[in-house]
Length: 314
Image (tube, rainbow, N blue to C red):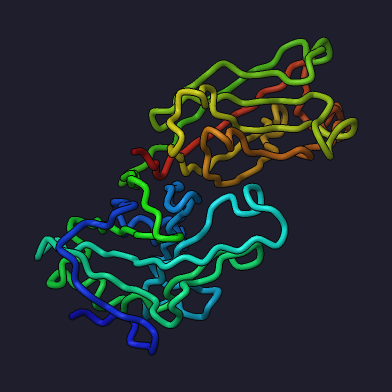
């Protein structure tokens, strides 16, 4: 058997049966490291009347000083603070699975240190294994855990022994992502009256996007700053579990000196997290200075550059 966590209170076994509640196929594993993604959190699944997620650290959990030698895998209760009252706690027994492609079975890791299961509550929503498996064993092709740059993880979670039908999601990284650019020229800027102005919709990474500009600011930027965001143009078209990982750059072009004003970020976009940006992108005073080049003949030019690195679908 592969080099699993050998600590006391942890049992390992082999199962011919897929996990009852949830499986996720993670593709293009090597690109996670290439794009400095230290952990991947799955969409939620339901078991025992609660929502859960799997958390995967392909290079080990740096917060636990376990980076480099092991992969770390955890079970996390999702939306814990919003669905449970103060003082709540849930005891759950769980098993985490890893598919052995070579033998068509699953290696299973279970915490047996307590018969009542682990206690999930408001300040402790995550339990699992810092040293789920050594990096060497995990990446060794002879063991069959990573095949074609893909691994499959799974989970079973038992709360009061209740069972729910599982769902399978797929997380896929884009091997050669392309940066898409969209340029938006706004004429008669001083005549803008709406709180929010939207650019035309443009496509990047098979998804539709738009730039959102708040000429008089939004939130903490109201009154003194321009607020600027990248947003999904059609979030309602996404399934409940869909996630889109993208990095992006928003620029206000300097039309005189080519010293553009730039903001960069990366974000997991979804149906419930539809936009990302800056409420205090640039001060209105600086933006309006005649020599700054951002507002020339009452026109400004905004450019978005978007690269989609990965998506989760079911």
